[in-house]
Length: 198
Image (tube, rainbow, N blue to C red; front, side, top):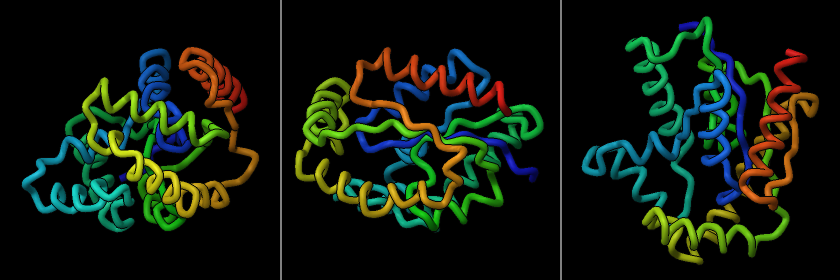
């Protein structure tokens, strides 16, 4: 299978990756792919479903090899059913890679062209956003403050290190503390600029 071009949307939990990603997919030709959505779509009674639940319920990341295998299987399924054309489409990845090892594991599948990082300086903002999201969407992993804090530790210790695996020239940082509309507009502007120079 040919490598699929991709851009990454990156940031701590609650930075608005999913919201911005979905809006970008509606307003550009990008195909938004959220590993969170993929994981939540797996039957909880299946082997992978049980594995995912055992980690996410503690605020921990699913092991790299399992994440990469599920991701690769999902991508192949999209290509096989003509929902994704490696020659024409560009993916917008949200939630993968989450560790430096995942960067290497997904290299045979995707060719990362650019990384957009939504940055939030204040943990309080993140905790408030996630607790609020839990009320609206009923997501259990967002309802417990101790799990949220675990996820932030995991993000800082593992996920933030992912950025060091990419050339600084392909990374654009966006202020994530602003309103959702401002964050989206800033990310869209950064994407348009990237496409002009691509």
